[in-house]
View 1 (cartoon, rainbow, N blue to C red):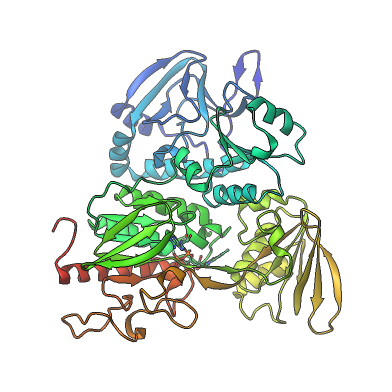
View 2 (view 1 turned 180 degrees about the horizontal axis):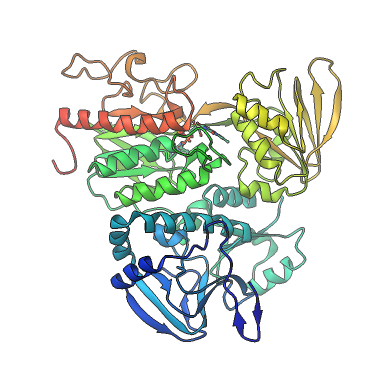
Length: 560
Ligand SMILES: Cc1cc2nc3c(=O)[nH]c(=O)nc-3n(C[C@H](O)[C@H](O)[C@H](O)COP(=O)(O)OP(=O)(O)OC[C@H]3O[C@@H](n4cnc5c(N)ncnc54)[C@H](O)[C@@H]3O)c2cc1C
């Protein structure tokens, strides 16, 4: 894109982020919207605005800019046939960028409700728009649109906030007290003392001093408010693939459904750079995209997702299940799906805690990859997640060392990934190797690794360590409420030892039903589960079928 003597060129399409609608599509949308003339300099919307219209440019040029009125940066310029907006528009959240008319012309404004009607009849338009918005979100993450966060790299609250926004795929700019020369001047300008950091600046004006994750989520309106007290049919705990599938099927089949999620929608899958074995995506799909798509789909059918809200207690009250969350909600419904999944274990190396979140990660998404561009990094683990992370990080890092405790890369990793790891330039595999020590003051500089066959130790340069070893279920909060197996996974169906209340069909738990009637478990948290995205999605969908059966049997749903 170039700008000279007042003329401004349109930004070329970035891999589908800025597609042009066909003339017929523009005409169709124009017929459902209002055409407005716009003068040069007019602001169509600002960062932080709630937008209820979708804009299509008919003539003239519209610039999308970051930090409007401050250190303004041009992101893209759109001419006739292009549309404006970002993923937040579809999710009903405030805009992260602004749009300003740069060459006078006309735009069509279509209300989101009308847009949904048009899209339901013309899915090709919906596909084009959704794909563009998802790609625009990745570009926003790259440029750090939206939030500005300022703090010390050594602060645990900085780590907490950065991990929270990264998991929620919220674009942000990070200004580090130790590294950025302008950080102190910016703090003075904001009237913030260094000991009040980390701070989050929203819309360039609202300064949040060391906010909790919940406060930040509230300000940027991340999740839904579920405090309405209306009657629910189904509570889903956990919004990974299993929980989101249960929400899509539950809500689309008429159940009043609320989803409670502790950290971020998408669960483990959202931290996968590329899922290649999920049916229907021959080129693979990033976990983040899968999560964003599933979340929009669940919300389209009326499911409400509240984030961050961790379920910490489960009780029973007159045939209803009562879930208390750390966000202060108490939700009650006759049916419950537990989809709390699992998480990677922490590596048992002394002193690793001080590097968690700043140089030790349990996810390898664009956010972590951008933080270690050009650096040497190490990945620990021998499964598919470690293999995926290795291949993905090799695109960003200076060098990737894959450390595996056993001697056969093909033991736990799919063959296609083994081949890819072995063929990727910049990757070195260390078999029969374990991490003994992390070296560095403040941030990680190197690892001490040991060869388990010879006992020899050596120093390996690494500025970041990615850990993908064995999973543990998130089921502590269920102890005493439903039956768990010896490793803490939830027992269901035939594996249940004692079903609490015998039903009319002889008192056995249904498939996916726990020891407590009306409570089901799906996905990685379930004892005997397969630990795959497709399996979790399938179980989430299946659980809803048994929820219907249960509700019919006990004669309960929100309308009855
Ligand atoms: C890096 C990585 C790459 C992977 N790649 C692949 C792949 O390519 N193909 C494949 O098939 N599988 C892959 N997997 C495995 C796959 O992601 C999991 O099997 C799948 O995500 C399990 O889905 P789930 O919904 O059961 O649980 P999870 O994805 O673990 O989601 C559970 C959710 O519940 C939330 N939660 C937990 N406790 C609570 C609570 N008390 N209250 C509220 N919410 C709670 C969590 O925050 C989380 O969001 C990968 C996993 C990882 C980590």
